[in-house]
Length: 149
Image (cartoon, rainbow, N blue to C red; front, side, top):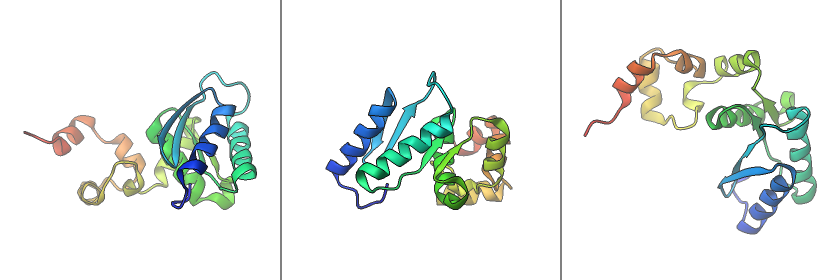
């Protein structure tokens, strides 16, 4: 959502999403996660319907990212917005080939939760893309980034 959204408008947007999807977790004033597991039909079409109805009812253009995890959904949403001319504002990366393309074409710094310092450290380790991060050794990452008391 745009940053100027107010609480009433946010509630209206969330109500629209909740009317179309049974399980919605409101994450913030301008973000929600919807559990689409078990939803019938094409999820990309559902995403387009959500986007269209929200825009029609509120005038707010939203991005829709569809993926098996919240982090990947945020990445799909980011891609939907970044490549809106090609995606129509909806990206589904449940398919492994599509997910791989998005991961390869996303800078590690664009991943949810990666700040400037961590980005610089990861790039120093030659972890440049989200795909590099996904393929990195989890033990090595924990050892490198885990805070010690």
